[in-house]
Length: 191
Image (tube, rainbow, N blue to C red):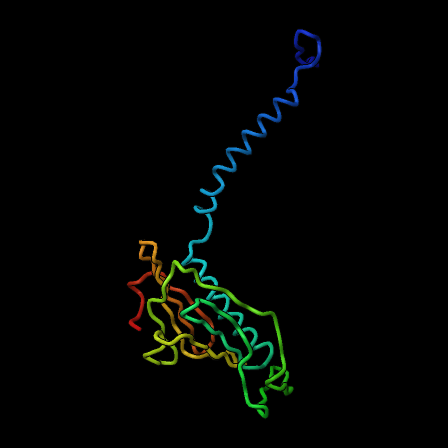
């Protein structure tokens, strides 16, 4: 068995508390200086975050409509950039049939709420809702999801205003109510 190295005074060689504190201070200083770089590099870009938020909102609205057997709205306000999901207003005598063929009032239901805000570093380059040519000039658009998972026709093109010119198309399938995203502008259909 090998003996521990010893210093001149005869005690075992080790780091002192002061030396360990200095090393910890230097490591902390380097980490605090480099942290903003890593957050910027590895964090989501504003267009990626907005795409994710819109896709999540559309999915949440579809899920609420199907699970609660009530029409649900995904609303996006183009002026403020706010997005929300809420139960659609319906007449008091309207009922919808869920999977178990039991009736539920259109005013019932519930579920977790959704809200998000688009980054001011983005612009809505184009929007289409139910073939309305003036959809993008309106203050807001509300996309209706039905309990059978169908939805309004909706597509939106987001554009980054950071000089990169990056664009994303989010398109909603009317039959399934599912959203898909395209990032290659060559594949965008003219709105």
